[in-house]
Each structure stands twice: as structure tokens, then as C-alpha cells.
Image 1: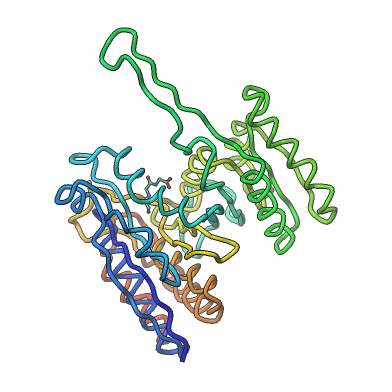
Image 2: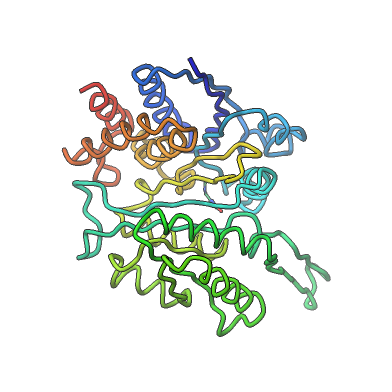
Length: 348
Ligand code: GGG
């Protein structure tokens, strides 16, 4: 029997309960599908930072490298640790060190979930560049605290980075409905984004079966609201992808439904799976975090590991659960009740 080693990083706030829910579902699927799962829990979080002065130990990346995959909950506790410290101390280093350059975020309505739009039939796969661009961390501040203070933050776009994320997008589009939307702001950002557009146009010649359209980020934001059904695969830079996928989450009913995968397509290091949402300190102790995004992310993990039937079983159980109206309204149902309903659907 194949056993997968999974690093669990629950993180902060609602990260704990939603990761526990996802793990319960995974364990049950493993039993029925005949594969094994071995977890190691890492307490890396803002609490860990408070105790040690770092979000993870100095050898954290090397510790994770040996695992088949990483399942993460949520990171951030801004009342005690600045978000810029927690994000740059855990999530971003993992994505960069393990070359998880493709951040995949599916946006569609699960049955029974009411989104804010009239359009109900959309199925968008957002692909966010995940290792460079606006989140490269290149910059600095001088003359701090004086009237002459200067802050500079530089986006870095490399040919390797842009080409590989676009190529990944073209391949995904080829396996779906054959449409790729490439998102920039090349009228205003005339170096990096024009570079991105040029690479899109060059690659398009290699994929004559894929229909490519370039959009500016502002037009794409409007399109995702006005005509989401017209979109298939959407590829964007790190920051633009981050923002668009919160919009994607909103049109699919809320962050409680937005799953994501940080993929290393070459499989040279583990990939990481996490709900799009953060730690939600405002509801962290209420027991009402929606575990659906985390469970959906766990299904994406199984698919990546090759356990396609297991992934399908989880998605069917999620759809069965929401179709019965469970977990469909933010804050109404308890995390444990939603999890129990998913587990029951898996059994049924
Ligand atoms: N579920 C992971 C998490 O805590 N996300 C919150 C967040 O701020 N993420 C930033 C990012 O995805 O770049």
C-alpha cells in the first residue's frame, strides 16, 4: 500500500479547525481508496514566532523538503505579528524555495451555494504566478522616520518565470475549454507587463488550439463580475492573481469556498495546498469557520498525488453536502457539523 507523507501546518486562527476537518476527510478517503497517509504536524505560526522570534526554524525548508505534500491552514495574527512578517516568514519562503510557481485557484459555485451574481454557470481556473513579480521582496527604505523617507519595492519579472507560468496556463487551457486570458496592465506598466504580453503572444503561436485574449487587470475585474461565464483559464502575475482570486472567491459565495494549490509542476519539491482565506481572527474562537475551502484544497492535493478517485470522492461529498444546504451560508453552520456532513456523504 502506498503511504504519502504529509506535512501539516495548521498556522493561526481558523487554520487549526479547518486543517483538522480536511485531515479527517482525507483519512476517511484513504481508508476507502486503499492508500495510506502519514502526517507530521508543524506548529509554525505567529504563536511560534512569539516564542522563538521566527515563523519557522532555520532548517524549516529542509525539514519540509522530504514530504510528499504540505497541507496548510492559514497564517497571520496581525494584532501581535505584522502581516508582512508572518507572510514573508512562512508562506512566501515555502512557495519560492520549492519552486511552487503555479498557484491554482478554481472558482465555480458549488450546488446550493448562492453567489452574489446573476450568472450561476461559470467555471474559472485562475493561475497566479507564485514566486516572483510584485512579491519578490526586492526593495528597501532609507531615511526612516524622517521627512525624507523613501520606500522602494521593485517587481521582478524574469523570462523563465513569465514563460513557465504562461506555458502552464496554456497546458491547462488545452485540457479544459481551450480559452486563455492573460492579465496585465501593459498600458501603464510599460516594461514588465509589455514583456509579459510579448511572451504571451510568442507562446500563443505554439498553441494554435488555444484561443488567447489579453486583458488589462481592470477590465478583467469587471469581466469576472459582468460575464464570468465567458472565462476559462485566467493567468496573472502574483499580485494581480492574488487580488483577482479574492474577487473569484466572492463570486463563488465567499472565501469559505475558495481552494488553492501551490504547485511545483516539475515535482522537484513538494507542492503545498491551502484555502485562499486567512486566519480570520474575528471568528477564530467561534467554531463557525467554513472548512469547505480547506477540504477542497485537500482534494486538489490528492489529485496532485495521483489519487484521482479519492479527489473525485471528496468533491462529490462536498457537492452533496452543499446541495443539501449545509455549509452554504457564511457563519450559520458549525465547522464540526459541516465536517460531519461531508464525512457522512463520503460514507453514503
Ligand atoms: N491560507 C493561507 C493564508 O493564510 N493566506 C492568507 C494570505 O494573506 N495569503 C497571502 C497570499 O496568498 O499571498
